[in-house]
Length: 297
Length: 186
Image 1 (tube, rainbow over the protein chains, first blue to last red):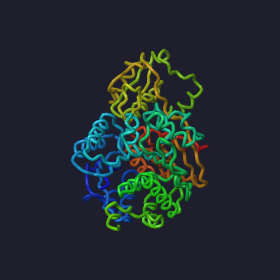
Image 2 (cartoon, each protein chain N blue to C red; image 1 turned 30 degrees about the horizontal axis):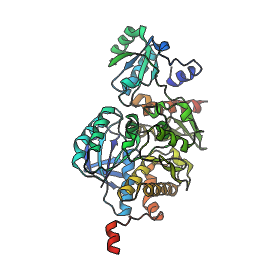
Image 3 (cartoon, one colour; image 1 turned 120 degrees about the vertical axis):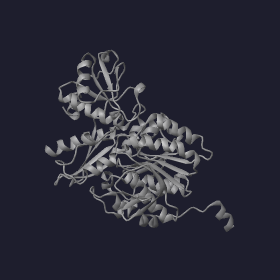
Image 4 (cartoon, chains in turn purple, red; image 1 turned 180 degrees about the vertical axis):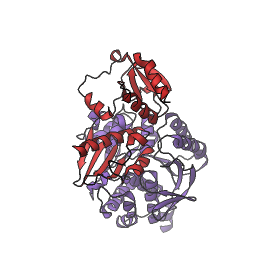
């Protein structure tokens, strides 16, 4: 089962763990409802839609309220550190968490010592933390946008806010920034870079590029990166190798965006609602397992 | 003086990044970035010449900002912050270069909408109505909260990121917000 850890923008929201569902336009976990605007709720809503399209169980989520003070994030890091060793998720995606150096170090120690190591995906604040701590290579996949890629490429920046101007400059090409991120060991095993064109790369360079359909307005819409991270997480959990999962996620996310006929004022839920159609049109199907292949033979 | 004005006014100054040039400066460390933003507002209102910067590696904890100030003014500055109930956790002399906040903006004109990006944060406004229509990017937990508080409201009645944000992403959004305001009032 896919596990997602992140935050909800409300200080009153308790620390919870459970399987999520979508009820109309709201995410549901236990008896709690959450608006789907952007951030981790948008990632989870996209993941729920993709799981439904593939016939997979809905994701499990660890969520906590945090509006930026970091208090909720502290509690969630501590809870994950205590809990994850005793559960068996195949894929874990870490998302909107406050970067906190010592909390991350303890959690990573637990992840490294798990009997069966899950695939580890990091985005948003948790990805900043993984890079800042010098532990990027412990993760399987980062999903930065181009601005965040510049941060990964800047070996001195502890947060995108401090990315140096000569690296942030628009003339820098994505493949060059990818190479620089790997050169300084500030990238995960794979990078999925979200932007005008989407890229999948590893330390050898760009492996895949998906650049159509193009909707310029998507850049302005909050949550489009979160949905892509949710989709690739589901496809990895479904058994696709990371390369195929990334390409499939890039295509589905772009198709869903296109079907929403977006303007810069479009909200992310309008795009999420098109994911089932996008999955159908991209002909996303569960991979055949080795056991199934044996049965066919 | 707003951070944006400060960044601009300092663009042409010689950078003081060496240890020798910093020996008369100290940094104020706070519990969280929200307190840094509040302390910056208080000190600038009182007319002090301070700078919001990135912390040196040895005191870095995560999503950090510090306030650089003239060490000789330490007692006066501490008095003001204690009166404002914003005492710093620690005061450390500056012995090496500090990180500079981002000061490059990317602007995209969609016709009816204008998008400004500062670092990893993008803010988009309807040029005709002055309504913020989207906030994109960022990764700290106050970004969804800031978006929920600002999107759908006008540039005149939406809260500023500075007033409700807590993190570096919130601070980057403040820079984008000030650039949007500057462009919309020009």
